[in-house]
Length: 455
Image (cartoon, rainbow, N blue to C red; front, side):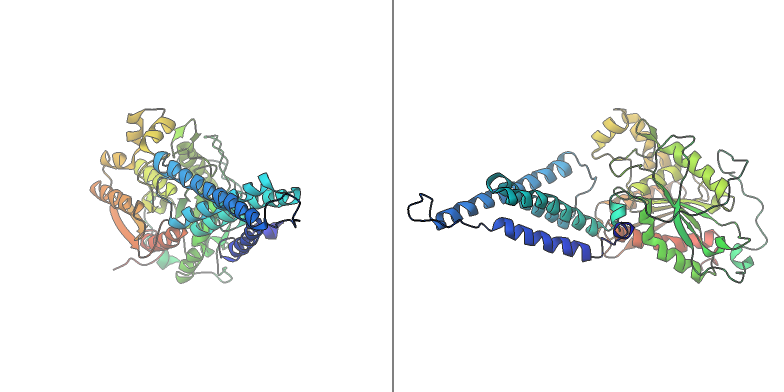
């Protein structure tokens, strides 16, 4: 079972198998075996029966396709559930699967019992194939376990907690060392060539927020007997998706560490959503105390369990899409904690669809509370010093790309040092993560004293 759950479902093989199987079953359901007839049995001719069947399945498929189009229009146009128009391939999967379901329903209503049974199973097969196809297109849930929200990752074993926790990280750093870490560091013999990656459980003592397991990356320099204190990057992913989507940039973390003698940031990817079906908006509300979870529970966990460097310049917060908005909001609110922000194709504000539905559902109809939580409002009312903000997006992301432009301009106007990076041919799927994190980390390395300053 574990091997099946760990099966890669985005490389095309699984989708192809399901697709071919669906087409074969659909062909069977479309075909109609006309019973043998005698001249005196009173049944319509074979041609009449076939023509009637063709009419039945054609109207059934058309009805399914129309239902799919109506569903897409309602979800995207009227409810704006996704915050951005879906891609053409997603529309195609939905329309074709609903049309196939229409054919299956026609068989259920008009066929013998064995054909009804096959058609019933076919409904599940068609919808499952579409789900796999859409997921493969976005590439965020790499395994079946990830898609179903089942954790099969290896848990990391960490030292016992510090017996003297503090509520927030110390905002001031100790005196700078005589030399930066990249000059002082000499890798010891036997240092691992790659970092460790696995799950950790973060207690939600203060917030009560029910979060999924976090994913932690420890670079090779963190795995030696006497490791140096290292910077920390707290990451958040989008919706749908979860902390396990951090595997998308795992190879880049290891390659950067290898190029810098094992030095790298400790990366903790947390769950700010709690479930793929909910979005608590990175604030404290009846939907979940996410702000307290991140700023108290997560921050305390980092300080108690991880050997991190002190000082705000060594703390960064980042995220993709929904997580990017959270990172920008929390980074803008707490410059005393986070000296750097990595916003990967982030939303420009909290969103539960349309602005109206977000205000009504997320803020109890209070427009002023919604406005106060917008990162643009927070940055407009604050003056920043020594905050680095990196904004990435793809050239094919015509929705969040302009939002990244607006966020970067607001951050720069508020005093932040900003970088705006655009990936050619990149959209708003997993390719945004694969581009954004590797593009932003080299800018952060010199700030963290993990590499020499760039000229």
